[in-house]
Amino acid sequence: MNDIPQDADAVLRLAAQSMFDVLASTAQGAMVVNRAHRVVWISEGYKRFLPALGFRDESEFVGRRVEEVVPNTLMAQVIDTGQPILVDLLTNKAGTFLVSRLPLRGPGGEVIGAMGMVLLDHPETTMQPLMNKFACLQAELDETRRQLAAEQSRNRRPKHRIIDFVGASPAAVEVKRQARRVAQADATVLLLGETGTGKELLAHAIHAASRRAGKPLVSVNIAAVPETLLEAEFFGVAPGAYTGAERKGRDGKFRLADGGTLFLDEIGDMPPALQAKLLRVLQEQELEPLGSNEVVKVDVRVIAATSRDLEAMVRRGEFRADLFYRLHVLPIRLPSLRERAEDIESLVEVLLEDIARRGGLAPKTLSPAALRALTARPWPGNVRELRNALEQAFLMSDEAQLEPRHFGLRDPGVPMPCPLGAGLARAIAAMPEPPAGAPAATAFHRTPGGEPQAPWAQDRIEDGAFMPASMAASGPAATLPARKAELERAAIAQALRRTNGNRMAAARLLAISRATLYEKLAKYPELASG
Image (cartoon, rainbow, N blue to C red; front, side):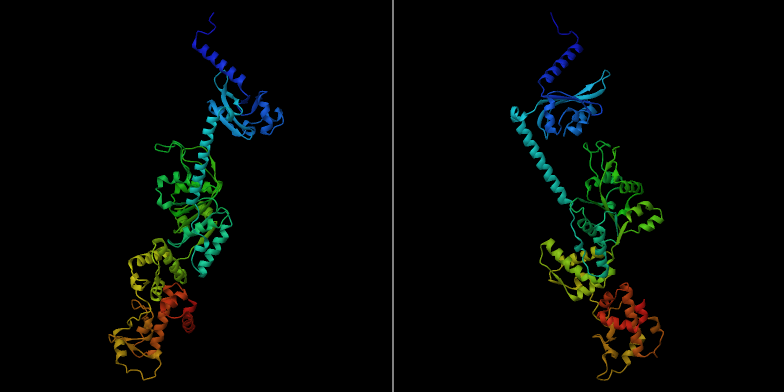
């Protein structure tokens, strides 16, 4: 008599039941989990694993969520996907087990739970070759992960410290004081200043001095990223979010900086559509990757920087006011090089050493005349422009000491022809030579070309700017001391204007000591107060 069913469906049901009966009878233990991931039953054989899992009896184990009581289990995955995991190795504090996990379905085919079975409780004894291979693969994976983490850490660690912000001027000292203070907080920092003033250096320094120093520092230059890619760059991309997207998805900069700091350079160039999304991340510390409905929590400290006037952009409607206020929590304004000209000497020394070190070249020095010439320049590009000028002169010259000519400049201490009018010059030329022993301060002398020149002409004079209107209108009756005094006052006023009132820089520009300048200002109090 043939007991095997004749139809295919019946044969499949019989085979499945037979296979299940064999697995159940040979298994070392089994459990059943319901749709809510809670354990509803365990076999007698499974109860012997309870002490190793930290439970005294069945009552403490049954009824709880499976992921809470069995570390590293994948039962929840089987329930959620409806796909079985026929053979797997499970390792937790109870040991290593060869397990099988099967979904349980109701009459309508819907998943109503899952069953897990421990096929072998000591596979390392009966499956030694497989276990050895598994152990080797696991060790290789752990080492690869360690190397990847170390490489990412090296690439994203801060490159500068607060001490690297060179300068001892009051403006530089104040910037460093503020940087140390904000580094101890966790609020958003906004760095304001002209291009080339050192905003990126200070961002690195703040991160290095903060409690997040051991975590990544991720930098994004918003102006350098195409607008169409900014959202993906910031928030990441879910797998298959759009045609051409990576199959495994890609983390955005916020995810990469999780636990650390995200530096947003040129924040003023951020398009309005992205400003609203950035505001949400700053407020809620959560984001949604492009093409995903999943909300991801992040812990990121943001440091933003810009050379643009954000307040003016807010007034013009080009930048969101709410985002500006969220960014403008801890603002630091970096001074231009014009505002701290006394730091140029220290900056030149550090930059020349760095240029020599990076190029593997012999170090070079700067002559006093070259330093005076560099100090007299306005440097609209600030430290970046100064470095460019030094590097160009360094590499284009064979001499060990750089002079003003290597920078295409002249020494402001070299006398220039007197900018007096031709009539006055002729009048001075017709004057008799001063008697022997006359004070040098009242005598004129002649240049090698025969032109009359005043002693104060050693100060830098450009474009006739030292020829005041009051002197030009005074006529030939004005005395020589009066004319000299007027020219001296005009020269000091011009130097103070060119250096934005910085007296040390003005003294250098005039090629006089700072003490001498203060003496002159005492004679002209209206200049000192201005």
